[in-house]
Length: 85
Image (cartoon, rainbow, N blue to C red):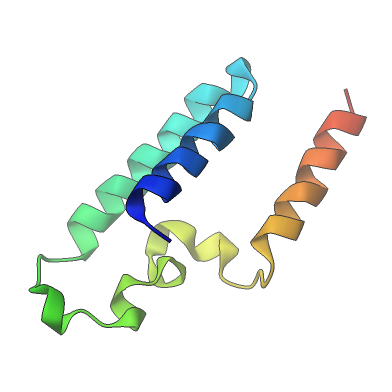
């Protein structure tokens, strides 16, 4: 997937987030970025491996490590949230 396509998809998903949840989302994204900066020293691209660049190996996303199908999981959470309103 190209970087531009990923950014467009992220923007689309952000636009679907209710306004009252945007602060929480910002905190997650900010924490994720800070985690990347502090845990991944800059290496030449040739030395990077799939294991070091995988989002599943980032400490900020440890809570997602056991989830095989994140899309399905998020859909379930969204359905629960909308049903409880």
